[in-house]
Image (tube, rainbow over all chains, first blue to last red; front, side, top):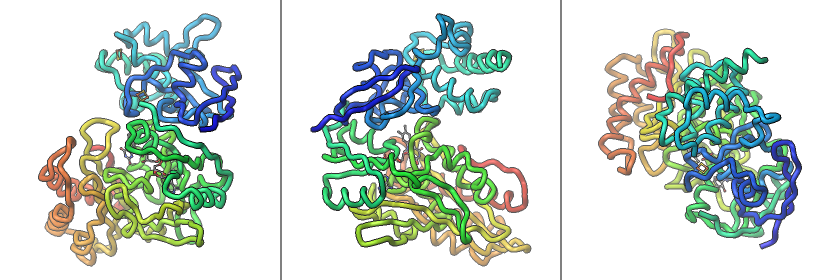
Length: 159
Length: 297
Ligand SMILES: Cc1cc2nc3c(=O)[nH]c(=O)nc-3n(C[C@H](O)[C@H](O)[C@H](O)COP(=O)(O)OP(=O)(O)OC[C@H]3O[C@@H](n4cnc5c(N)ncnc54)[C@H](O)[C@@H]3O)c2cc1C
Ligand code: FES
Ligand code: FES
């Protein structure tokens, strides 16, 4: 099988790679480019631990081939903190105890990031709908929802 | 798990993609949003030798009103449908239903055409296309043809499209005045396929007589089902409580549910009856101009 040349921009930096077409985007990120923030939590496209932002939209990077991301811009959890300072969503997760084992957190935070980019002031119901595609086996979601609403407030007061 | 290795082909136009499909035959599969095909490839339920990616083809993604109908390009993402103000004003049933497809990430990638072409029994596009009597425009090597939604779903994951055809567009006639519709979906957990769902679009006259109605059932058969007998029981009748209850009971008999982890056949049949009755009342409320919510139950 012939390999495909692709170019992607991840967290503001350009990368080129030659990949097998069946390489999943999550494996390009984790295995080839070293972005181990996004996780693999399932084999069935359900858990959302692999969520990244692709050209502004949240996607499950395990349900996409790397070749489909050619020419596109990707934001992973590693790209959120600026100059060593956590993003307000990360701070709010920390302050609200929105994680226990932390496995789901990179995906949860990216889904929250996407939600707040579209809706800066979501209701609790909208937050819950916004993270439908992200499973957490530890927290019971309450503190995650609280954290996302808290983050929304922090981001609004900054803007 | 890893998909089987395949050759990747990017197409720049529909004609080019059709050429690849004809040349490569059964070994080729087109890739749209990948939200059904890739999970199946990862589980090795599908293992095509060639993937023809439609992602780079310009002009396949649109929602527009023209010549008395709404046209949706096959590559329109579920998200664009969910957020369309044109659809919200013309057919509230569509964004209501498509906003319930899977989850945010799935809707950011998945497409109208992929959803219909996949022919999943519990899809949300299935019952909606049946309730709205959508026409599906397919293109193939010999030109194009229109397939009525009710002729489209043939069997489990099997549609009227042939291997070398593409679904290009979904066409829905604009509704007459005094029309509206609604969608109700019962799920075991948020983001899942329907245990049962009912889509209904209705037109009434000023006296409350049903002039036209379309009813689509999801998750209660090997394919989405058009409840034609329930439609007939409503058409031409004044929509009273008794008439509605009767039509809902008929719809339940038209369902042909397969028991699985989401629910038994009996339970699903019962759900159809309840959802059909409720969804009709939501549609009627909307025709009267009331702000009533459908969606998840
Ligand atoms: C976690 C999860 C939850 C989901 N929940 C729901 C749900 O609740 N309701 C629901 O309706 N769906 C659900 N889906 C499925 C989702 O809607 C898919 O997006 C959709 O079924 C397939 O669209 P796609 O564009 O991703 O197609 P793909 O996966 O790319 O393709 C699907 C099939 O259609 C063929 N195909 C694609 N486009 C065309 C075309 N234009 N012409 C001819 N053939 C074509 C492909 O070859 C393939 O066989 C879910 C998916 C996931 C992963
Ligand atoms: S790893 Fe579970 S959805 Fe991607
Ligand atoms: S914190 Fe453990 S899965 Fe969410």
